[in-house]
Image (cartoon, rainbow, N blue to C red; front, top):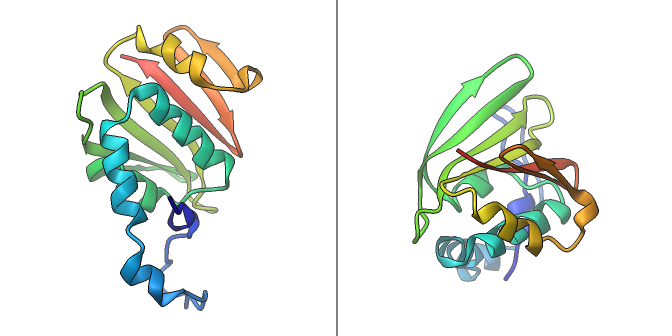
Length: 157
């Protein structure tokens, strides 16, 4: 599955984007739909591993990434960062209560990707799935995973 669409940066009003685009990918590549369907049904530990791989592969665009998890976006801005929350999470077994993305206002990079789980028991399963245990830091009610330039936080609420 092609993940290139995740790494394109958002268009900034007033700036001309002259990045070359392969027109065939607009019409024939349905990677976004396939990934959205996959994210809906795969087990939570596989989903977290997939997210770690996405961040390990580069700096994903928050607009492309949030749409893979559901619909609606709540926005809370400060001087240096904006926190986005997915309003309605689309997961088959309703194991995720909330998803937040902390985005740096200057670079538009996701600095922290937070997943809030319904069940604390799922944390250990997620932890066991991450291949590089050195990148994991245990928290009282969850864990932090270093991936690329970002932190992925998985917590129980």
